[in-house]
Length: 299
Image 1 (cartoon, rainbow, N blue to C red):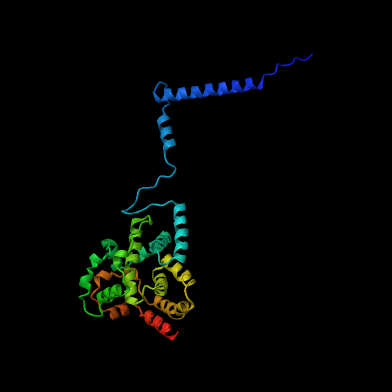
Image 2 (cartoon, rainbow, N blue to C red):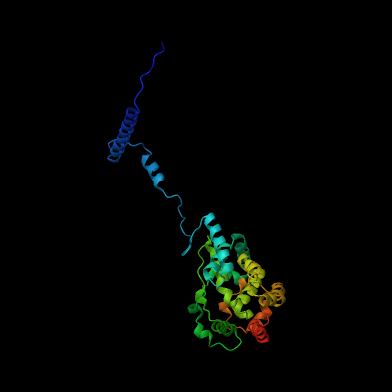
């Protein structure tokens, strides 16, 4: 007859497994306590392995300049996507505009601007001296004392008329290369000079017209995106003025205007603004505010 193994009661099996598990857990805890007290020899790589295990998954690199925020590739992609959507639906919110500008300021385009600056004596001077435009550095009170029709008066009068200040320009944070960050900061801070010399207001329509002009002159991707997508949600009358008046003006002037990144605006504040436009190759566009008022009057 075949041998029959005696059956073990289920309750006995359970207690046996529970006892075994508890014994192993106790041994593991005991070993851990002994390791912590140094009673058991640790391998030569124990501390190194322990440090690796405790190290955070992402370690942000050291910043390359003051206020720099280094980002990983996926963070830059998220910054672009979020700021692009935000800028489209809320163009009045400056944080979206600032983030979109820096997330699309790819090194290739900024390096092209750097080459333009290095090939120009004034551009080289700007790169060397690193000017930073603020209301204090320009001394706005002094600019008001300049004669009529000078660049200084055109600039400060435009600031007062539009209710803006050079101090509102945010510092660059998300561009990794320090020199390229300065070039983009220079573009950002000179934006109001472009407004002043063209006379375009800061209303949405005026910003879009200037963005196309900037893109054609400086090849800044952010400006091109603004000129391409920003006209979509605006009113039909505004879009008509852009396409029939200001976009043709921007295209025409793009063939004659010198690279504006090489203009040292702070050094030529005493220049006659009409003569300066002629030298730069800029034709002043029709007064946008007057056209907008005329349109409202005829309604």
